[in-house]
Length: 504
Image: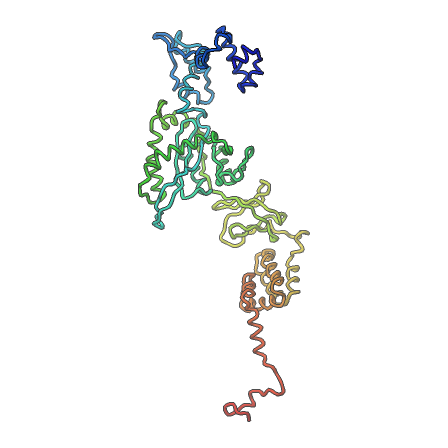
């Protein structure tokens, strides 16, 4: 680089393009050479290491009684606090050591040199309380299922705070959404607060659709994160540095926790969590090798005060579904039917299901809400249509008229079915199902099946369908043909036989 600039006379810009070094760096090196009055003939034969030492000689230790070197460990910790800058810390250092403090520029150089020495071991690059990195270990923990007595492989969830490396571990049976979300809840309760950002790998439980620019989060996971007052940022695909903290946290857990428990007999998840926490406490309290303190001490000093407070209420697990509104203006959720305003017939709506509540949304706007119930139907009267042009073609008279064309028994069964509902429109779906059975079995068989269903008071779609599938409608036809013997002049009746069967 110096040869191109000092010997060939190229501009800093051209040198930067050729060497692929930043223009600012080129300018800095050239300026340093000029300050030392170095030209190319003087350094041409020198090794590169010697030129570097000449341009940037090693920092000399201050003489006793001279400048006082700041406590760089303390400086690094203070810089993690919100709003704290090197300028502020230097001013405080200068006030504490009048006449013995370095200049600001020298102060920054010394700090950069110290930071470069420790970076391979411990790198503070995240603001206190800002980021929490979550991932699952590739290793599992053998746990005996108390219900079956069989050994199972439990999943290990690891959460690591960015500034302190303070770590939490949870043990679950799976990586499914329910367990993944519950582990997040236990994480913030363990920390005693909420980080501002969760950084996760592209797990299906958290990310529905990975994308470089706009990844799509799982709706239930998004609900949890919003409840906590945080945001979630999936790590970019094929960008290992995005999740380096998570991977390092997982590695430490595998070495310091799972390896210790590898031969232990553990029964049940709660026992597993207790043993894991015992070993995890040792990991968090373990002193850093080349830094003052431990994960626990740095957490108490930096992360804990900076975390957001926990929400006042615990998060309630949610499940999101898509559901189409049927012609009876109901949607089906877990084999239960809930009404929505009839105007949404035929549309696909978003459904949020909690243990006690079902909420229905259209384009993010709530359109209906129901408490969960054991009844088959949950219907609100204000969702029912009165006289609506688009819905009139499926009125009770129209359904009955369709059944009449098939046969009298079909008509009677449909009429009874509609009358048995709180509102006739609730019977539309089973009645339409009955009518459409004629497409598969024919109108004659359908009417016979309806007759048998009426005789046995089995007035439902499932009963009629079962009769047809089992051919029970044909059994009645055969019974009727046997009950009416053929009449003919050559065939005697029973009165023609007396005396043990001899004709008289």
